[in-house]
Length: 402
Image 1 (cartoon, rainbow, N blue to C red):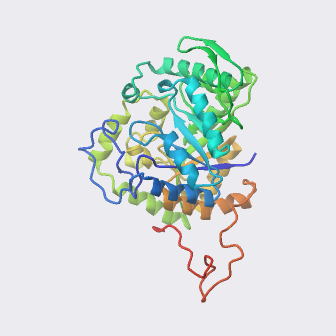
Image 2 (cartoon, rainbow, N blue to C red; image 1 turned 30 degrees about the horizontal axis):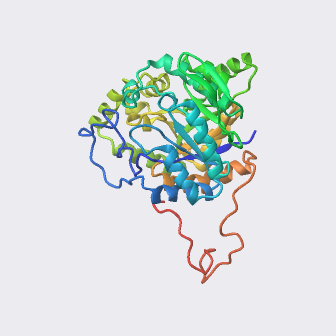
Image 3 (cartoon, helix red, strand yellow; image 1 turned 60 degrees about the vertical axis):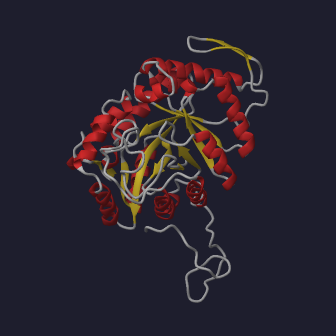
């Protein structure tokens, strides 16, 4: 089982700090209590294209885009970025409660044809009623998961290529059809830590995603979903969502983590923790429980740091260390059954290079990657005493901030 590496597209904004344009006190609406910061990068298509191209060049298989009212629409943004890349896949996050399953099936089929098969789907059921109501969705937590199960059943039925009927609690479809089903069918990723989420994963999804909890907690999740899937006569693969700070030495990596903490004043942390604490998401509550909002409780496992979760919702932990140490932790999770690693870092452009140039070769040397991406410098001679350079003798420039 090889490791599949994916990166993240910050369609809500990027920057050199954890406190950027979508750090929030009230779901991203009111920001008066957030410390002003500099160096924030807007998620315009030119900047996102830089990240997408870097991810492709560095050998990442796909990039994940978030979903919500605080970021750009994932479908439209990624189909635009597909025109700037050649091989990179797009793990498009979307909320099943705000779109017809038949329309979603049709969109996925069209997307596959436009991009020549580069779509992956990340189904986000939603764990925050405040955010869901912004989309006009008023179902409670468990009913949202029940609706997701019906949604996925309809999508897969419509992809069958013949008229599909469905009569459920949330959807009633007569003759649902996608005239030209997607080829290949997009893999479906899904996450959820609640009792209501487990059966949905077991019955309907290809890859179950967990946030970056310590290995022993991840192992319990893998065993839980595997057992449920076995009862359904299915096999589910597993992925993990993590941030990463990888450097040439462990000291440099932890110094970078400490600098990110230095940008967070106590008022900012308290405001973020108060807002995140209102989430109905079981996964979010598990993230918060890892540190309890305390700065001195952030190293929760070897090379696993929970500092991101002081002010960020969702994935709140980062792998921090030397390139070899980060590779060690990835190998440890992989041994537990984790196949897909969806990674990110601040800023996303620079951190993609740190990981791609530092950790990816380590993983390849350990036989965890099928192959390394071909270097753009292969076969290019040195010029004027410089290291190997881009064609024409001009120095090859990589991302700054190293």
